[in-house]
Image (spheres, one colour):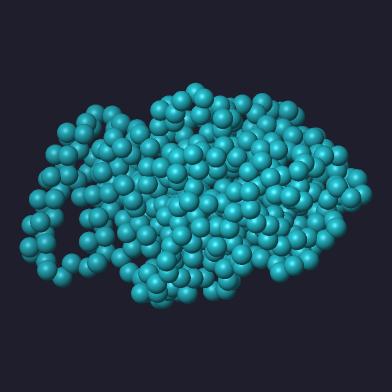
Length: 479
C-alpha cells in the first residue's frame, strides 16, 4: 500500500453552479465541461467515430486479474488460489469463479490480457491510466483525464456536462489525493461529480467491519441540482434576464471582448439550463427505474452506479466514469494486500463477496446487457480499467500485492471487435507473452473510437499547444 509521499490539495470536482454565486447576477460559475471546445486543431475532426459515448468503469486500486479474467488453474495453489474456473461463451476461454455473469457475455467483450506497464505505485499508475500520460510525483495533478479531453473537444450534449463522474469521490492514499482533474486544460474541465466533494476523503481511517454488507443505498442525485432555497425557477429566470441586459450594455461599450468573456457567458447559460431543466434532473433520477431493473444491476454501490451511467448515456452524456475503488465501508477495495488493519479475508474468499468481484460481475453484466437491449451498445464504448494487476503469488497474509507488469481489462460496444481475446500471459499470469499494451494505448483507442485523433494539439492555460497524447497507439484488434 506504499504511496508516493507527495502533498496534495483536495481539489474539488467541478461544481455546476455555486449555490451562493447564483444569487449574484453576473457572478455565476460553471464547469466549462458543459460547453463545447473553443479551439482545437483540424486533426480533431479527421477520424470517423465508432462511438458517441463512453462509460469508463474505473476500478482504482488494482483489480486482481488471476481471480477475474485470466485464471491459471494449472498453476500452484499459491498462485491460483482456491477459486474454480468457469467456461465462457467463447470456446476455450475461461474466467475465474466470481465472473459467472460476465462469462456468459464473453462474446460481447474485447478482452485484453496483456495490459502492462512498468510501475507499481498507485498514484503514478492511476494518473497514467486516467490520462494516458506518464507522470512524476510532481505531476500528479498536471495532466488532464481522458474524460477532460473529451469534454473539451466535444462538449456537452442535451445539456449534460461533457465529463461526469459517478460519484467521483474515491481518493487513493494516505493521504487522500484527488486524481480526477482537468490538468493543464484547467480545473473547469475536471469531472462533474455527482457526490460533490467527499465528506470522508481518507477511506483508510476509521474502523471497518470485517464483513460489511454488500447491499447499500446511496443518494447519487447531484447536490448542485437540488432546488435552491428561496430561489424559484421564475426568480432565476428573472435574474438571467437582468444579467443578459447588463451584458448587452457592456458589449455595446466594449467591442473588444476576449474569447474568455464569451466563454463565461456560455458557461453561465449552461449552468442556468442545468438548474432549470427537468430533463437533466430526470437523467440523474434513479427512482424512475423499475424495481426489476434495479435488482438486475444489484442493490449495491457498484450496481447503482452502473445503472446511473446507463441512464446518463441514454440521456445524451458523452463521457461517464463509474468510480469504484476506495470506500468508507469497504476501505481500499481492490488493494488486497491483507495488510494489518484491512480486515480482509483470504483473497479467494474476498473475491466472492457481493461488494467485491462477484458484485462487480453482476453490475457490469447488467450494464452491457441493458445497453444492448436498449440499442445503445453499438454506439457506447464501455471500458473496464484499473491501474495494474496483482502479484501472481499470494502473500503470506493471503493477499496479492501490486503488479504493473501484467493485468486484464476489457472493452465492449462502440465499434469494438466482439468475442475477441487480445494478448496472453504466461503460465502464472506474471508477464505478457504477446505484445504488451499500456495506459497510453488504451487512451489512444478510446480517443480514436470517439473520432479524436491522438495527435491533436490543444492549448494549455498559457496558450501553448500540447498533444492529446505524447505516446501510445491504438490497440491492434480492438476496433
